Each structure stands twice: as C-alpha cells, then as structure tokens.
Image 1 (cartoon, rainbow, N blue to C red):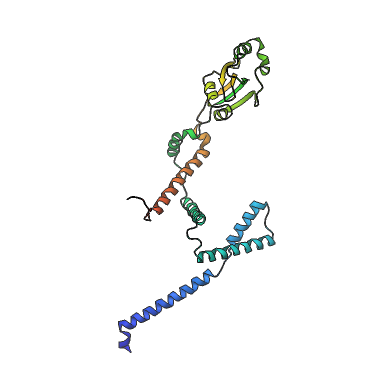
Image 2 (cartoon, rainbow, N blue to C red):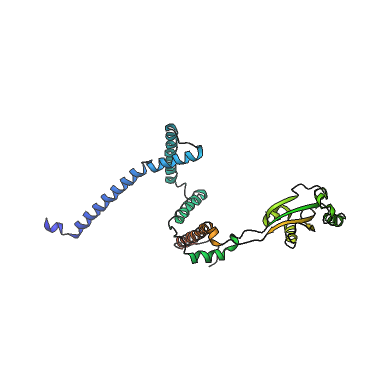
Length: 275
C-alpha cells in the first residue's frame, strides 16, 4: 500500500481528481450565481433617487415594487441576450460599455488642489477663456439703404440743435434703437462683424453722433454712450471658476492617457491598410 502511494501515476490521478472536483464546484457556483438575480440595497436606493428626481417625490411601496420588477425583468433579459451572443458586435452596447469605463477612469484619480504657481501659470496661458469681453452702450438711427442721401443731413442735424428728436429720424427698425452694455459677441450676432469693426474705431462720446456704421441691416448713425474695454480679472476674483476649469482639463488629460494605455495593450489590424 505504501509503495502504491509513492507511485507518480497515483499522485497524478489524485491531483487530476481534485482539480476536476474543484472545477465542478466552481462551475456549479458560477451557474448558481448566473441564475440568481440579486437586488441590493444600493440598487433600491438608486432607483428611489432616480424616481424622486423625475417625479419630485419619493416612490410609494407600489412604485418601488414596480421598479424592482422592471429591474429584474431587464436583468433577466440582458443575461439571456448575453448567452445568445447578442451583445457582441452591437454598436450601441459597445459604445455604452466604452462610456461606462471612460466614466470609471475619470473618477479613479482624484486631483488635489493645484499650487498657487501652477494655477497662476495655467490662468495666464488660458486667459482668453476668462477675459471679460468689451461692452458698448449706444443709440443708433437706422437707414435701410447704406447709400441713403439722408445720412449726411441727418448726421449734421443730430449733432446740431435737433439732437433731441433722434428717435424720429431714419427708417423703422425691427429691433431696439438703444442698447446697454452689449458684449462684442452679441453685437456681432445682431448686427454683424462689420458693424462691430466700425464701433471699435469710434470714441465713446455721449455728446457726439458718429458714422455711418454698416450692418447686416443697412447703415446706422451711432452715439456711443459708454464703452468698457475687455479685461482679464485678477485671479483671486475668479479663482473658484479657474480652479474648476483646471481640474476639468487635468482630469480629461489623465483620462485620455489611461484610455491610450488601454488601447496600447491591443494589436490593431485594419483591413486594407498598408504597413
């Protein structure tokens, strides 16, 4: 008996039997887990929170039972679809999975607040993102024809004794005749880039009418009441917004690096592509 136990063949058979039994046990356990749908407390809390956001109040017990039933049904159908290989090659599913892992990667590395020097340097580099735009407050008299012969006499009249009747001059205008603190981008949106370019050459002088300034509508005689130059606020005035933008950019860069690292694990073969 002792001699038999020392035989390598016996050792091999016993080891194979143990491995087979372990595989069977793990297989049964995996099958049991696959056949069991568990609704956790976290699942219930998540469903309740989503319901509260959409409905504006907490779910009743009937609402909760219905949501749990829907969750169980969805999980069961999803598992059957996976067994049938339906998830493979489905663009919508693959895109959703990619989005989920991207979201996971973006939340893995919590950024610490930047050093003052780091934030100041980043703020200087990205100054255009935080620069407050130039603004104009102005009145205008509109002429639909840029070559209207009334333009010259109207400008002389406006700068003379008849300046108080400026609203009655020119042609009817569909928008406002007076604007306050209008930013450059809004001026371009409403009147066009040529109108803004002309405004930028005119002085802010409440006592003088100037122009004409051409727009997408026609021509305008303009009185600039006030002009505020574009300015970059001191960092301390906008620090929370700057720090949030810095963190967003840094997180985006780190997520991109993590994705590149994952993609780098694979050999990519593109049909028809030359080496």
